[in-house]
Length: 192
Image (cartoon, rainbow, N blue to C red):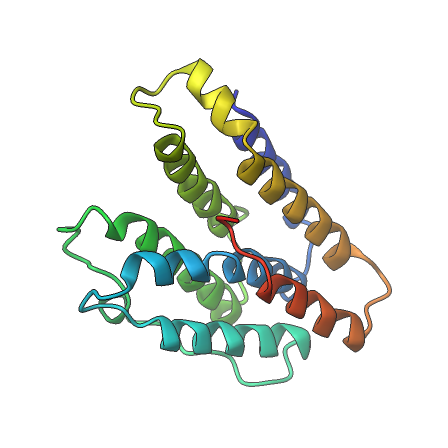
């Protein structure tokens, strides 16, 4: 089994014991790192709506950091954010990044989790495609998968997710800690 799949399974298992607010805090950080991906692959497209996507994520952050005491976000309309006809191959990574924010919003609105962590999966789908291309790997193989799984970007994202899971799982939550957590996430990008 690929390392990234093992990691995804581990994260989903650990998330199953978290409250909705804790899950939202963790997924806000995961989604935050995907926003630059959306921006990169949507710029100049008729469906580029990165300002509104950032605003949506801000509402999600506010809700999570306030422990659910602020207004919940409205669920986004996909047609406003992505090429739903899938006519442009460059839109694939933007779709994954948008889908992460869409899942996070749905989690907050419904306060129901199905035991999976799609934004985590989307993060690694983005990285898998991006690193395969950057390394010039043409065919999918176990050897190429190992190269991708051990790449700096993939390892970095696994480490960030592990660190963030530890933070949101901690018993001693303080408001100041979460503002710093958010600031750190806002300074990170999935692709750097």
